[in-house]
Image (cartoon, rainbow, N blue to C red; front, side, top):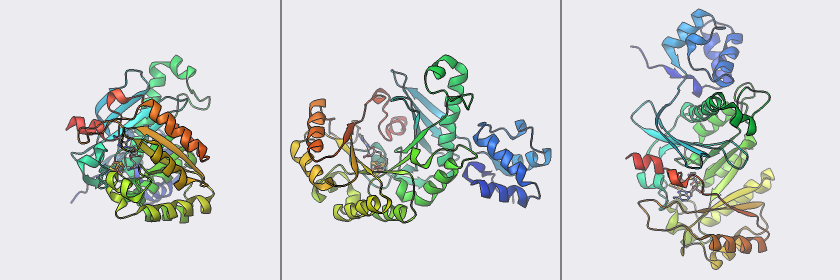
Length: 365
Ligand code: SAH
Ligand code: SF4
């Protein structure tokens, strides 16, 4: 019985070496293959001319890189955001977004098909949970974005030069990853961490661990495990409510992991690792954007190494709320500043392409 080819993007470098040496071939060739995949962004084994023909033909019959085809692509009118609906090997699709503003290139990648957490205002939450992504499917999204940047440089060198053209590479490279696409990354812990290890491998994509930000709805055991494993990526926690009752109304997962336990886990993280935590707060007009809520956030986070990222709501079909006005966001920020808490209001560029979490997949039906 022939099994389906395995996706190499799901292999760590030691695993790839083990695969190739297990076939009786040299670890040097495995190292070359790794560079073809991640430094040169190649996915056609036949074109990997420095690999022995015997290895190339074995790769072709038994493996595949694991490239994800573009099912749909949308560009924001300002040109700074590109959103991709990528086709998985089964019938499912996920979203990956490339953002090129604020002086950085960032990929927003997904960790699951759908999400089990059911946050009321979230398009992904509204579609429910289908399955976890594999490590290879998570890595493939970053490879996809890196490939897009590579081609952008080829099509328009002047643009790349003016932007963040690296003298060490012949094209702009992906610098930052946020795990803020579809899904709850700490619900798919092992696959997400393996993918991060693959992407941070210095001989390949070589992303700094501190260039990855993982956003969680507040999965307490996952935060504790990240702390115990001394994970170097940044942590963002989606708060949205500063009392258990107000949070639970927006975030059903707060029933399993109540606010007190979440804050204990966050303190354990910041104190053990001496790291700052980002707290995300979706601003919904008249719901959680008033001065009372801002003071409650201030009291809750006072004294912590914390930064609050305020995100005006992206309206979704399944939730009636509206985004807060700028004046409410500004007032919220001023109150937080009074508690010594820095904050940002996320730019809403890309909103015209439905860049809110899960929105392209929903539009696709
Ligand atoms: N599951 C993780 C990461 C994905 S969502 C999490 O919940 O943190 C990334 C961020 O986008 C979260 O803070 C989430 O609450 C927020 N978000 C989801 N839908 C949104 C919407 N329609 N408008 C604004 N922010 C939204
Ligand atoms: Fe899942 Fe995050 Fe959406 Fe909540 S906000 S439903 S945790 S993807």
